[in-house]
Length: 200
Image (cartoon, rainbow, N blue to C red; front, side, top):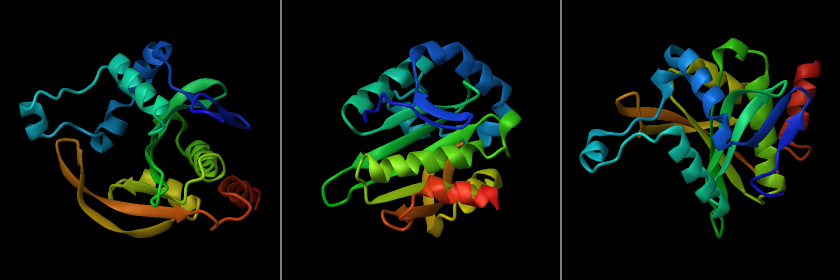
């Protein structure tokens, strides 16, 4: 599989982000500004002074696709019944003696709580282990982000500890909780475990 491949589980899908997603992506983000802004990465003051500016959608997609071709990220949108409802990125992909990555995600508040994001994360984790051959994947979440923490808790991903001042979010350096899973922890796969949990 390549970064351009898509994954599907029932009504939920992961597919590469595209420039033509701009209109829908902006509409979803604008409608969810209050829901998402408090968890959004921002450029710190020192970055602004160095000339860094928040990327436009087109520039973001171009950067993600360039990094994807280099094997460093997999930039997906999350779909529900074929409609764009969020974004999931596998980032920081490293091989050699590390063989790790991290996953970041967001979802439209209108469809939150329907199991969409746990399913998407489970598919992405299986992809990391089965297709990319990674050993470890981390997910970093602000302690106050109860909705995002529920996603990883539903999947039974272990909490490892606090990363102090980990990311610049919503205008300041914020602590994050590190959750992590390593290859072989779920011999049958994370998605299969999640399916089993849902059926009980």
